Structure formats: structure tokens, C-alpha cells
Length: 464
Image (cartoon, rainbow, N blue to C red):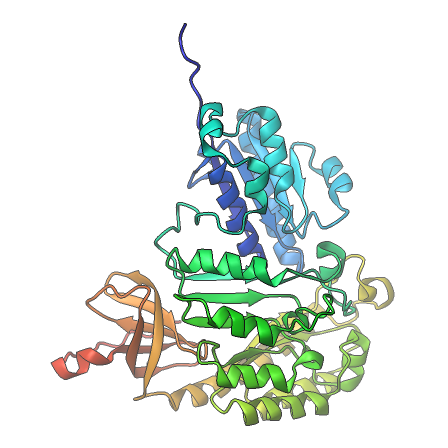
């Protein structure tokens, strides 16, 4: 009797949005590969296509809808193609409506939940050669819970940084934010699960981890056992192989001196703090339900700089929030001008369904006014960073080399500043002292310090 031939299936994952989505997609890929699938670089050649989506801004949602349309065209040619929709577009209760809107999608997965896809493929009989299951001694269900799976094949041995979720969901309910309605209530992951995952990553060559949470400095509050982000950082720092630790995003109200002193005293924790302000006017902040004032934010920034003198501080700002007048916007402008922060993620207000702002606050700032306010802050921040980064010229900084293209490598300083390195050697995964020859508002360019004594000449090519 002829033996049954097992057909190995291929998967493709498309991801848009935040670092949390990137971590969820990596997790999905790890589980699919454990279950016997192999990666496909394009959806056209895949048997399973998964779209991991974002709806924090309308532009991101539009991009996901457009991608779905392209995948639908592939399915019309190959009806057996399995399509999975994942992430914030699905949320915690949107699947029924989405299944009517996109009837060609086979599986809907809420954020960070991969089991529905694995269950569906198992029912199709697409997972594993049954002969291998008998010898593996570990079930697919166990693999879903495993925190120590091999990295996906496309990045195995090719990546040195990883995002690790530590707080899922959010319960703060800022009036503009859709996250609580799409990712659910705040819940911290058990510390042992996090540490197990990071040990596994370190064993596969990961040198830097980013601990993620919508409000990451609230880590452990829901446990009620004394667990804190500060304690977690110290435990992660004990893991061999991990050389750098970062975390985001923090909320001003939960940024404690204990956390700041941990950043200052634990060498592996990078001196980079992401603490969004969102707006600089007290009335707008109240309308956003942020829970602090302009002056309280200024005081916090001064405190951060006092405890961590070498710190880089990043922020988020929304322009054109409902009801924001030009005078109120100028309070934000002056706040950014006075504080001279190291990075400002700028966005124009976008109505998000089901949020408090969408239900009770008319979107009354014109598109043109939002665009002009965004441009004013962008120009201001570019000027600030041009001056601040100029102080780094001629200095030597430590850079973790992440990628390489030709004779140019890329990495970041401990403060998170992007550095391009002219280098004859491939030093990916290494922390390299780099002499900075050129500085711009958003990137720095330099050479490995050990090449200076060889008298090598550097041709500066500005990076946009």
C-alpha cells in the first residue's frame, strides 16, 4: 500500500501598527512553524495569510481594508486559501460585524490571541505530519502556551532585538483612545512567563528587549502582590545574554521615583523614557482625561532629568483634538519648545468609533488646521534636535548594531538615537564604540572607534 504524502503548508503574515502587533505576529509565526508550516515571502504563494491590523488611526485601518481587498482577489483564484484577520480591527467583540463585512475571511483573532487560527487549521487537518506528532511528545495545545519556542525562520539568527508584551489591554480610557475597546481591560502577564520568554530569546541571540504595555509603568498593579515594573526590570537584567532593556509606553501618573532610580542604577536598562504628554493645555488635557496638568508634566520631566542626567525623553502629541483652539495649541507648542525633548511622535486627531470623544465631542478642528499645527510642531522639533544632536558630534557612543546594508550598518545608542555606521566589518549583534562624525535632527553617522587609528577617511552621506 502506498504511503500517504503529507503536504507542507505555507504561511504569510502582514503586520501594521505598533510594537505590540509586531510581537503578536512573531508569536503567531512561532506557533505556526512549530505546527509544521513554513514561511512564504508573499501571500500569492501562501496557503494561510494573516493580516495583523491596527485601528488607532483611520489611515492604519484604511491600509488594512485595502490589503484585505488584495487578498480577496487571491482567494477568488484559490478558494482553499485560508485568510485570518487579527489585531485591533477585530478587537474583543467586532468579529460578528466583520464576518458580514468580509465574508471571505475564515478566522477572526482578537489582539494577542492566536488559538482561533491554530484550531481552524487543526480542523482542516493542515497541521503536522501525524507521524511527527507521535514522536514530538508535545501537543499543539501545549505549544500555544509555550513561552520558549524557536524564533520564526525568516528572522532566526538575523535579529538582535525583540518586543516582549508585559501588560495587555488598558483600563485608563482616555477619551481619544480606542485601545480599551479593542484590546480589553488591563492585565499584566505573570513575571515568570515573561522571564521564560526572554531567556528563550537570549538563547537565540537576542541582545535587547523592549518591554511593552499600553501603560507599562502600571505593570503588576493588578496582581496586588508587590510586583512592579521596577522589580521586573531588575529580574530581566539578571538574564545572561540580554545587554539592553527598554520599556514603553509610560503614563505620567505612574512614573515613580523607584522606577526612575532603577533606570539610573541598573546598567542594562537604557536611559530612555517614553512618557506621552498628548497636549500642553490644561483644558484639553482634562477633556482627554489624562489626569495631570501642564505644570505637573513639566515637574515630572525635571524630576526624570534630575535622577537620570543622561536620559533621552520621548513623548506623544495629538494636534486638533475636539475643541482645541489655536491659543490652546500654542500651549502645546511652548511646552515642547521649553522642554526640548529628544523625540516627539506627532499625530493629527482622528475620530475612533466608540471612544468617549467620538460619542460626545464633535471633530470641529479642520483638516487644514490640524495639518498646519502638525507642521509647526514638526519644524520646531527638527530645530530642537538639530541643536541637541550637534552636541554629540565628535563623541564616542556605544551602539548595538542591528542591521547591515553593503558597507553601512545601523544601530542605536543607549538613548535610542539612530546611528548609521560606515564599517568594513559585519558587527551585527555587537555593541560597538562608534565615533560620531556627523549629526542631523533624526540620525547620526560615524565610524567604529577602532578604525580611527587606521586613518580611514569617511565620506558623509546625509540620511533623510
